[in-house]
Every structure is written in C-alpha cells, then in structure tokens.
Amino acid sequence: MTTQNKSECPAEGLLKLLSGKWKPQIFLFAVSGPVRFNGLLRDLKGASKQSISVALRELEENGLFDKHIIKQKPLHIEYTLSEKGQALVPVFRQLELVS
Image (cartoon, rainbow, N blue to C red; front, side, top):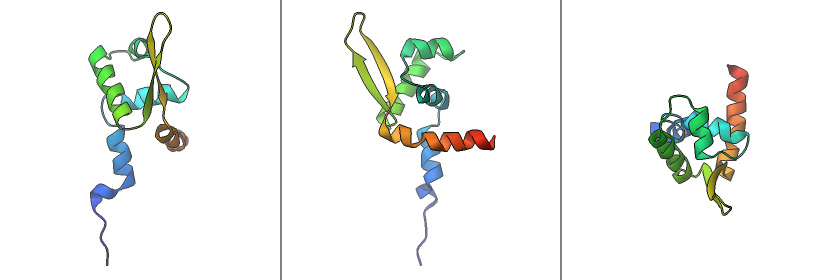
C-alpha cells in the first residue's frame, strides 16, 4: 500500500508557484504577450516597484517566465512565458470557464 504525501499534490504546487501578491495578475498579463516592468507598474493599480520586482524575480526563478534583455536604445527588459508557463495557460482558461 502506498500513501501520497499531501505536499505532492500538483494543485498545491501550482498554487505555491503563483502565490503572492501580484503574481496571478502578472501571469495573466503575460498570456497576451511580453510584459515590461514599467507597463506592469502602470497597469497594476496599488502595486509598488518592490512588489512587482519581487514577483517577476520569483516567477523567473520558478521557471514560469523568461527574461529577455533588448539591446536597443534605451535598453529594456521584457518578460515572456516560458514553456513551463505556457503549459499553465490551459489551466487558467479552464478556471475562466468555471467562474
């Protein structure tokens, strides 16, 4: 007989990846295309620079976002969904149908 540890639940892992202030909203913005820091700061009413910075860093560290440095003048950084992040899009689409 095998027992499954509660921490091995896939849904729990997903929730941990996207838990935290602004992460779900940032993820949903990225579904539509690349996002930039200043655009997020403008679109996320009430968000601080630090909270957006932390969320972007954690999304990148968790493998959901890829960071691209665009070497144009002025230099800017775009964040896009990684393959792992794109794999979660159908899950969000299903949540939209339920709500």
